[in-house]
Image 1 (cartoon, rainbow, N blue to C red):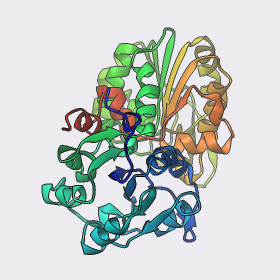
Image 2: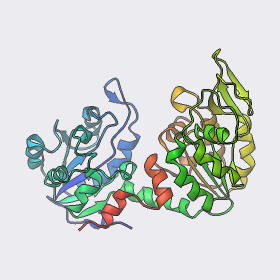
Image 3: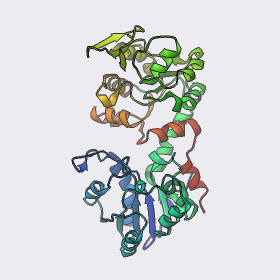
Image 4: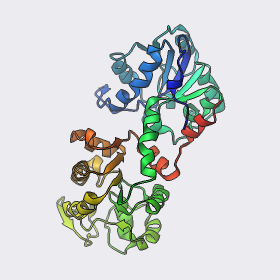
Length: 373
């Protein structure tokens, strides 16, 4: 395991550069959901309480988006200032003014194209702002970006509390207790092939939902209409595996705008939008007998409002006695809206990073911490 910031005791006056994931939804200029910010605060407060001078960095999905709304939220929680700069003169000046127990939030680091290119020069500019580096951004630790892996080559590096919690929370899912069930939803089967192969080698059952069902249906020779398909060729070899469970019924949207529940009779103009309540009922006995359940990804087109399959599945797993590990942005949204956060053994803040960790047992950001000086 990587070194944790809990090992850092004498921090008074130390300059600490912290990579967080503060990429939260912004609505009308304000933070709509502060969940990820709140999960980051224990690490930040620990450093501030120990007298460190803390420089915070994060990205936004919108590369030109601003972290100003995040700053407005953060300053209600901690002593923090904001600079509309990343690694330039302004950032260096403001970082130099920091007093013990105070923090500075940099602007969205993806505004600089060198971040995603893992540019060594950019990593050196960031590293020059501090003496110690802390990664507490598990959801982006599958990205070999400058702020994730580049800086750790240049500074003594440690894991924040949330990153440690993610590794400890997800690790049991790598060795599930039998009977075990893995549930994979979302889209883009081509990005999930390695994960599903790994799950098939470790879990007793693997239930497939979301848009990746379309790939499996297409591979079986069924009509999928106008539905999204990304990797039917990848699905075909998996069909012979008896561990794979597909939903027996789907909900489709027809050209007239009506919702219909169908088995395999998808019309040529229909779009598959969710799995049906019958599919959840079919899964219920397996959930009931499982001792370990892993779930990532929605069961339908969640972003377009087709969320009943996801919500029903959340309720089903929440009511089970299994050790349950769940994650993914839409999965998290469902659980939060249903007030079921405390009904699962572990809820990850990550989506893609969770999938990569489960497929590979580690992430570039984790390995960078292990290899830091």
